[in-house]
Amino acid sequence: MTATRILVLNSGSSSVKYQLLDMATHERLAVGLVERIGEETSRLKHTPLAGGGEAREQNRRIADHAGALKAVADELAADGLGLDSPELAAIGHRVVHGGLKFTEPTIVDDAVLAEIERLIPVAPLHNPANLTGIRTAMELRPDLPQVAVFDTAFHTTMPESAARYAIDVATADAHRVRRYGFHGTSHAYVSRKTAELLGKDPSEVNLIVLHLGNGASASAVRGGECVDTSMGLTPLEGLVMGTRSGDVDPAVIFHLMRVGKMSPDEIDILLNQKSGLIGLCGDNDMREIRRRIDEGDESARLAFDIYIHRLKKYIGAYYAVLGRVDAIAFTAGVGENAAPVREAAVAGLEELGLAVDGELNSVRSDEARIVSPEYARVAVAVVPTDEELEIAQQTYALVGDAGDRNA
Image 1 (cartoon, rainbow, N blue to C red):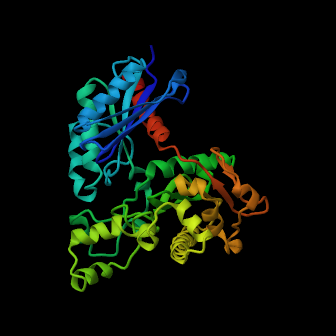
Image 2 (cartoon, rainbow, N blue to C red):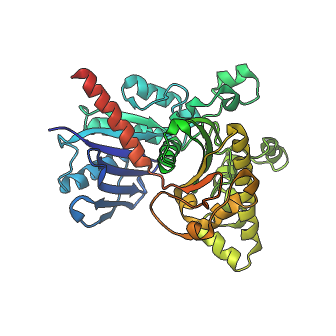
Image 3 (cartoon, rainbow, N blue to C red):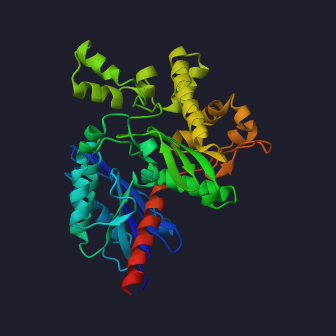
C-alpha cells in the first residue's frame, strides 16, 4: 500500500490546528482545532470530511500540547484515520521562523530541532510552540518522517539589498538582525495559483501578493521568487494589521520609554496587541469597521483610510521594485472577502494599469478569479490561500523524493 496521507499540524502557544489530507486526490479527510490548551476548559472541534461525518466537539481540560495531540489522534482513530495507519506518509509542521538556514522543507532530526530552538529569540511567541508540536508528534510516531515547513523560507530569495537593515553590519550579524518575512507558505501558494489563473508559468510572471488577514503582509514576486516583503525581523513590520502597528519610526519606542516611562514589555504589547485597527478605532474586524463607516463613524473611517494609505504605499513601492507587474493578488480573510478594501486599494492607480470591475469585485466566491476589467493592463486577482495544502504538498514532495532515493 502506498502511503499518500499527510497530517498537517500548526501548533500555536495555546492551540493546535490540524488537517489530514490525501495527496493522491488532494482530498481533505479531516480538519480540526484544539484551543485554550492549559486553561480550565479547553475546546476540541473535529470534523471528519471523508464519508460526510458530523462535527464533534469536546469541552474539557487539556493540560498541554502532548495531551492535545493525543486527543487529536483519538479523534482521527475514531474515524478510521488513526496515526497508526500505514497510509500516513508523514506529518508536516508549520514552523514560523527558520532564519537563513532553512530555505526548503526539511525532515526533522536532532540538529534541526536544535536550530529551531536557537531561533527562539527572534520568534519567542511561535517557535517554542512549533517545537512542542514537533516533539510530541515524534513521541507519538517516532518511525514517521516529521517535516518542518518554514514561514520564512519563501522569502530567503530576497537580495541583500532588500533583506539588510541599514545598521552597523557587525551588530546586525552578531544578533541575526535582518528582514526575514513571514506568511511565506501563503505567498508561495498564492503566487503559483495566480500564475495558473493567468495561464502562465510562475517563471514568466511578476506579482504583488497581498496577504490581508488579522496579520497582513505584502510581497513582490519576480518569476516565482520573492524579491521583497513587508514583514521584517518579526511580523510587526509593514502593513497596518488587526492589532499590530506595522511601520513606525523606531524613535517612537525611545520616546515612549523616556517620556511615557513605558517598559520594553509594555511597548511590545502596545505595538503588537493594542495597535493597528484595534488601536485606531477599537475594532479589528473589517466587517464591523465597514458597518461603522456606513453609520457615519469617523474613527472607523480614519482607521480604514490609514489602512488603505499604507497598503497603497506598498503597492507603489513594489511596483517600482518589480518594474513590470502582471497581477496583484489579494488573499486571506480580508483580502478574499472585503470588496471595499480591494476597490479602495487600487482606486486612483489607473495610470499604473490598475482597476477593478465593480460587478466582478462584489461577487463572493471560494474560487480564484480576476476582478479587474478586460482593458486593465494589470490583472487584479482574488486567490483564496491554502496554507495547509501548501504545507502538505511540500511535505509530500520531500518525503516522496526521499523514498525514491532510498528505493
